[in-house]
Amino acid sequence: MSLKTHQLLQKKKKNILELWMKNQLADEGLREDLISNDELRSQSEELVEALVSNLSSGNFTDLNSDEWTPVIEILGGIAITRARQGFSPRETGNFVFSLKEALLEVLQEEIVDEPQHLFSESLKINRLMDNLSVVTFETFIKGREEVILRQTDEIAEISTPVIRVWDGILALPIIGTLDSARTQIVMENLLQEIVETGSSIAILDISGVPAVDSLVAQHLIKTVSATRLMGAECIISGIRPEIAQTVVHLGIDLSNIITKATLASALSHSFKLMRLEVRKSNPIAKF
Image 1 (spheres, rainbow, N blue to C red):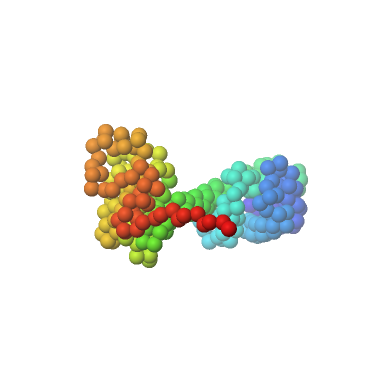
Image 2: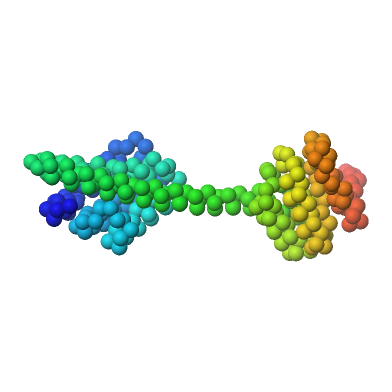
């Protein structure tokens, strides 16, 4: 880009910002529930300042070079923030595309009498902004993946709660499918709670598990074995008729594991193991 064009854009920096803000605010998909107009203007002004100041370098292709680091960092920060706030890829992409429109509009207004020069400078701006759009999308995707991974970990923690149902008795209701990663979380949570509470019985309730195949059964057996190594007895409850038929059909041996149809049955059996007896008290006479 010639020095003349760079000086022109530097001089028209405020016009570029206002045109860009106009384009963004006119977008029907603008998420005013996620970002305020003041915050949007602040982000836009920071990016325009860095971009226009950097155009004098003459480098429009190697965005990995040091001179583009400030612009990349600003765009990356905005993309990551928008990924965490819940913006869609389209909404994030429009943030950059609308800036390209503002830059091209200013060039068209100022370089009217030099069509060849206008074409060459517009082509450079197009390529530059397209490359910056790619960088923005890549960073946005990374940010979205981080959000998904964090939410997955949080859901895994929430879906494997260890409940202290009685002194010395723990219950862990499992909801959803058991895989290797989730089995590891289940075992870690259960074993940690056994250590902290000194419990001697753990109940694994699988009434919320949609199906039990050989892989799920192996995960359950591993959990039972780990629990026994900690000195606690493990009971599996929630064995529905269809699950029982599947286990028999697959030839899975659960004969050395205590199984019960319901959590209530498992709790009742736990009381017997601990030599506890629960009785209904006689109603208090009213006088």
